[in-house]
Amino acid sequence: MACGFRRSIACQLSRVLDLPPENLIKSISAVPISRKEGVADFQLSVDSILENNNDHSRPDIQVQAMRLAEKLKCDTVVSEISTGQGTVNFKINRELLTKTVLQQVINDGSKYGLKSELFSGLPQKVVVEFSSPNVAKKFHVGHLRSTIIGNFIANLKEALGHQVTRINYLGDWGMQFGLLGTGFQLFGYEEKLQSNPLQHLFEVYVQVNKEATDDKNIAKSAHEFFQRLELGDTQALALWQKFRDLSVGEYVRIYKRLGVHFDEYSGESFYREKSQEVLKLLDSKGLLQKTVKGTAVVDLSGNGDPSSVCTVMRSDGTSLYATRDLAAAIDRMDKYNFDTMIYVTDKGQKKHFQQVFQMLQIMGYDWAERCQHVPFGVVQGMKTRRGNVTFLEDVLNEIQSRMLQNMASVKTTRELENPQETAERVGLAALIIQDFKGLLLSDYQFSWDRVFQSRGDTGVFLQYTHARLHSLEETFGCGYLNDFNTACLQEPQSVSILQHLLSHLAAMAHKTLLIKDSPPEVAGARLHLFRAVRSVLANGMKLLGITPVCRM
Ligand code: ARG
Image (cartoon, rainbow, N blue to C red):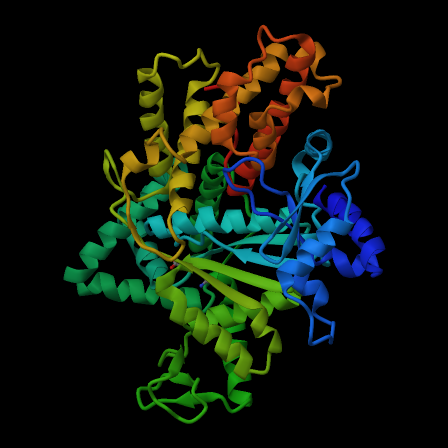
C-alpha cells in the first residue's frame, strides 16, 4: 500500500524535478502516526534530494521546500500538500486510503504487512534454539521466558519468509543421570514413571540428592552409573533412554498447551562422542592447553592471559557444557548450513556464549559470526498457590484456574462451550503480554496481579477486543460482507482506526461506530473496517504466540 502511494508521489515529483522516480522514492517516508488527526501521511525530505547538488550557494532549505511545494498539484492520490521543517508533506485522499488499506488487509489475510519492501531480502536459513530445560530438574521461569521469547523470534522469522528450525536443546546428560540411575534403582516405581514421568523423576532426583550427601556409598554408585553411561554401557543407556523418551513425550504434550512446537528435540547427550572429536580437533590445532590439575583449557586472549581461558575438558577426560556447545554448533552448521543461529537464554549465560562463539572463531569457523545470543532478564518470585514452580504444567494450571475464577466473577462472561480452554488461552495471552511489556534485559518481580490486570495494554484486553470484533462478524456478517462503500468510512475516527489498527481505538469505536440500527451501507462498510482490524490484531497476537479467542 505504502509502496503504491509513494510511487505515485515520486512520479509527480519526477516530472517537476526531472529526476527518475526510483531516485526519489527512497526520500519519501511515511510520517509516524500520532494520535493527532489530520497530519500528513508522507513526507519528502528536501535535503536528501539536494544532497548530490554541488551548488554551494543553494538557498535556504525551507525556501526550497516551499518552492517545490508550489510546483506540485493535488491529484487523485494526494489531497493536500504542505511544508514542514525542510520537508514537503503529502496527505493521501481519504477515500482512496480507506479503500486501499481495507482491501489489502482483507485480501492479504495473515500475510498483511509482511510483503513490505522493508522486509525484502532473500529467505535465510535460521536456527532458533530455545526453552531447553533440564531433564529431571526444575522447569524454572528462565526456561519459561526462553520459551516465550524464542517462540516469538521463530514466529517472526518465519512470517518474514525465512526457513526456521526450532530446536529444544535438553539438559539430558551429566552427573544428574548418574544420581537418577542410582536413585531410580533405590526409590523408583515403574508405574509412577509411566503415569507421571516428570513428577516422578524429579522426586527421585530430589531424594537421591539428599541421601547422597549423607551416604557416601550412594554418591559413589551414582558416580559409577554415570561412568557407565559415558562408556556406553547398554543397560545403563537403556534406562537413561527411557527417562529421556518419557520426559520428551510429556514436554511435547505440555508445549502444545502453550501453542509451541519444536522441529528437533536435541540435547547435550547427542554430543558426548562429538565432544571428544572437538577436543582432538582443538588439540591438533594447538589450541588445547593442559593444566596442572589435569584439565584442559582454551586460551581466549591469544596471549596466555590466565584470566581469559575456557575449560573444555575435565581431568577424567570427559567434556563440559561449553565443549558440548561447540560440538552442537558445528553439527548444526553441517546439518542446516544456517545463515543465522539464535540462542535464547537468561543473561546469566552471556559469558558462556561469548566464549563458545569466540572459540569457534579461533578454531577457524568464520560462520561463528552468524551465531547470536539473545539474553533476557531474570524474573523473581513466580509462585503458584501450591508453592514454587517446578514444572511448566504448574504454571499452565495456575493460569487456567485463576482465569476461570476471574471469568466467573465477571457477569458479562458469555456461556462458553469450553471454558477451560478459553480461560487458558486468555490467561496465556495475559502472561505473554506482561512478559513482553518491560525491557528484554530488565529483571522483574513476578506478580499475578500484574498478569491479570484487565485495564491498559494487557493480554486480557487484547483477547477481549478480538472476541468482541469477532462476535460483530458473527452477528452481522452474512449479507454485509460482500461489498462496501468507502464513502461511509470518512468519520475521523474511522480513518484513525485505519491508520493505527490498534485495539484501544477499535474498542472505543466499537461503541460509537455502531452497526446495529445503521443503514445497511454504513453498517456493511463499518463491518469491513472492524473485520480488517480484527485480522491485523489476530496476526499480531499469533506472532507473539497468543491464540486469539472468539468468545470470552
Ligand atoms: N539447559 C540449559 C539450562 O537450563 C540451557 C541450554 C541453553 N542452550 C545451550 N546451547 N547451551 O541452563
